[in-house]
Length: 185
Image 1 (cartoon, one colour):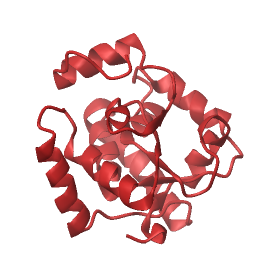
Image 2 (cartoon, helix red, strand yellow):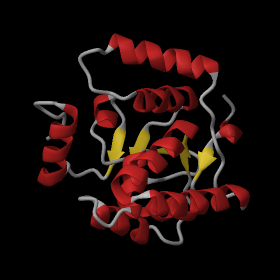
Image 3 (cartoon, helix red, strand yellow):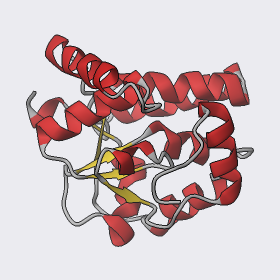
C-alpha cells in the first residue's frame, strides 16, 4: 500500500507533535482517541481534548483506515447519538475534501492478513479493526499510535498517551472486553 493512500487527520492531529510526534506521515491514530475527543461523556474526554489542544499549530499527520473511520462513527452513534455521529462524520469528510485527511482503504491483502492475526491470537480480545490497523502500521513502518486502547501496547507499538490508562477506563475496558488483566497497568 502506498503512503499516499493513507488517511491523515492533519487538522486535529498536528496538535499532538510536541508530546509524541517527530515527523510527518509517521503515526497512527486509533478510534478511541477521537471518540473521547468528540464525546464529552467519555472518561478520557478531558485527556483527549488536552492532547489535541496542546498540539495546536504543530505539523503532524496520522494514518487511519476506513475501518477506523467506521468505528469512530459507530461508537459515537451508540454512545452519543445519531446527531453527534453525523456531526463528526461531516467534520471528517470536510477534512478529506480539503486535503487534511487521506483515506487508506483496507485492501484484500491487508484484510486477509488481519484475519490471520485475529485468528492466530485467539487468547487476545483484539478487534478485527485493531488487527487491520496493526497490519497497516506494520506495512507502512509506523511504530507509534495515539490511542486509549491498550491493545496497541500489546501489539508492541509505542502509544500516546504514555501514562497508563486511568482506573475508570481500565474498569470499563475490562468489563466490556472481559479481560482480567491489561498490559501496562
